[in-house]
Image (tube, rainbow, N blue to C red):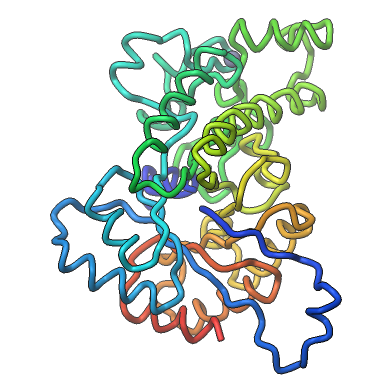
Length: 361
Ligand SMILES: [Zn+2]
């Protein structure tokens, strides 16, 4: 498997209309034949500038017919955004949040990058792969920079919402099936993948707890040092949510598959984020799980959210290896376990659209 594809897709990352999770008196009084709330689906797309407007009109009309209500575009392509909107689909801009390797930023602010427990910076020593350039979430300059980026995206009239990807720390532990690829044993948190131990983070923690995390014998085992880092990412999301709110546009995120996995390996505490909806990437193949796990992971996320905002199950189409019965089963399990819809990553062809329609009734 291509490492970049893996990390990128796991790093991946949608929108929403709040749906009441508890039936009201009047709803429960409805006849049993009352149809359930219709699922609304989503797609992640890296827009191709070579696509023609005519092609896009046709493609997005077909998406809409299949129940797709939102698209997340990984790049700014006005043509794609407008074609989606003309077909009644909300067009969101999907951005890389904490992982930012733009050359000008690396050159002008190397001091904004996260440092591992050995003191190595992502500006000079990217972990695992060259494009892993994580910013430190504790520095006010970083938060301001990300707010400016969000402001620029949301100021465009054709952008309906902001979608956060890579809104996390570097993976302190990779899924077990990748350990051999990298020749590493991550049965414990290794210092070179454990972030962020920059001066700002250490000082802020010390102010609260009276100790520098580097002076702890086992910093990886400290619950409060973990919590501190969940809160650093939550603070970034809260700041970006304020920008979205000013623009009256939804903010959504692509996150790791379950609340437990997300906290454990990338320090994402997403059930406590101020989002409009969330797309956990329930990519069963990456975790060596079967299709049934999609339902289990959705249930875990929905339970953790307590109805705060809707959850859309992120599905990785290549994991289904062309088996549309499995895809149908995965979509049904997601919906049965409380997902408001699914969010697809991969090639959304006619067969996939047909399966989406079939599974949503
Ligand atoms: Zn830091």
